[in-house]
Image (cartoon, rainbow, N blue to C red; front, side, top):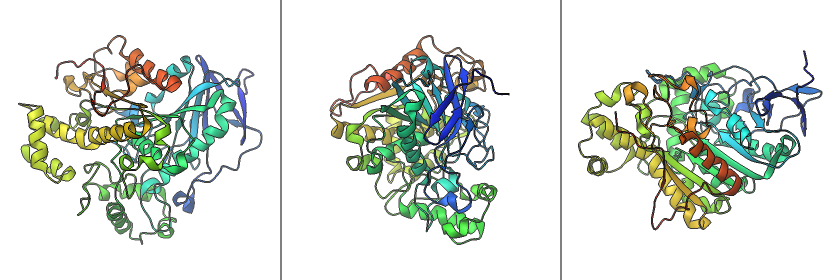
Length: 484
């Protein structure tokens, strides 16, 4: 039964009913594009036709088709959310606002991670309560994943998941004012694959004027596949499905069939005569671009956008510790990984050994993964942005070590997220197999990190000096506890 207290917002597409949540209001499952059905899964996003009456925005949306992800002993449910919740209308946003009152609050638009194959706005880690408390309108975005989102197919536009995020930004520009947000002060932020998508938008001419600031958490400006690499994935997918590698041939197939063949795409060798594997074999999907975003920023809006960018100090631990591979890794395993990501693997390993004297093979492997997947591409993006933007770049390094898995998880990929969203005290994040481990979060760290993100969204400064390519220093966030 409709409660009189439920807020209703008039948008250009129709009215939406939300709920009062804590210190603000929340509106869920609002479509920013038409449902991607059948052949439409391989087409650009199109405007939603709108609706009559009042749309129910009190329940979460379906999610993009996606496989189950297993991270061994570590419970990553708060990051991945419920997985695939079937339903046609999943190109949606959630809006969490202090009040849909015509105010002019800063807007932050979050793009989730998940290796281009998983994730959604339903993940518990993306709770917007703290942002709303601090006067920010938070918008979280769902986009196409996996084969519908990123497989390069003849007869279909490339990077359809990226086109979805671009369409969502247009929706935000046109609509967020109705929710109390300022369309002239939009910060686009994301983590992992989401941050990598943001890097591409910084180099995309069509993204000009859609956002004023950007935050890239543990992403990269050098993670795109070349067209040649992408075609290897396409050929493997078409062979596994028994169809031609075209959008027309893929269109009649059900999403469940696309998910079923994903194991056949795992571990493909994407090294070519001109490129190494930018994702080190961890995902068969990425952006497909002829030039890496870090090398083409001048073509997009990057020069006019403030950028906050950084990584965690032990990113690679997420891919080794929960599976028990930090201890079982051999020297041969380290060399194999280094060979995937660098043309001179012996030199790469020598450099890591000099930086980490006495490190075990597992820790060397983690360092190689972290550098190749995130740190190198982040540094290159920071350098490139600083050169063209004139002091609008801020770099951070997140060093707090989670005590999960007997203290071994450390400052791994994703560990900064509870601090960004200021939810590090939630009980479901603590315990030996939970993301932050059994130890309580350090007093004040979430307030520091979250506060820096909010300050950056409001003013363009997180509270420390801009990045200087001549003296490349990062702001350290989180005390470095001794390694477990």
